[in-house]
Length: 80
Picture 1 (tube, rainbow, N blue to C red):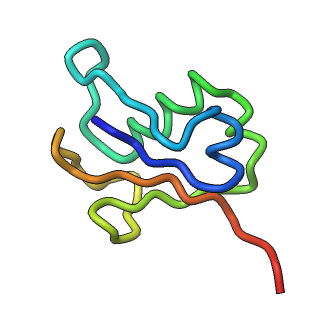
Picture 2: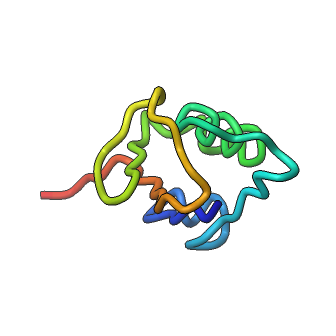
């Protein structure tokens, strides 16, 4: 499963794309993706929060994923 990362999340991971091998790591919900990423990249826990979009729609942790879904991590934005 391919995860797209933006802004500070991209900086923390060191790439705009991160792949989760669903054959090696069972992954079935947005919450699972969030836990996997925070375990692999603990600095993500320092973010106040981050949104997850599935197929270009914001999704909560209960949304069930398929390997073909487009998943994006969107950190909080600031600006004026």
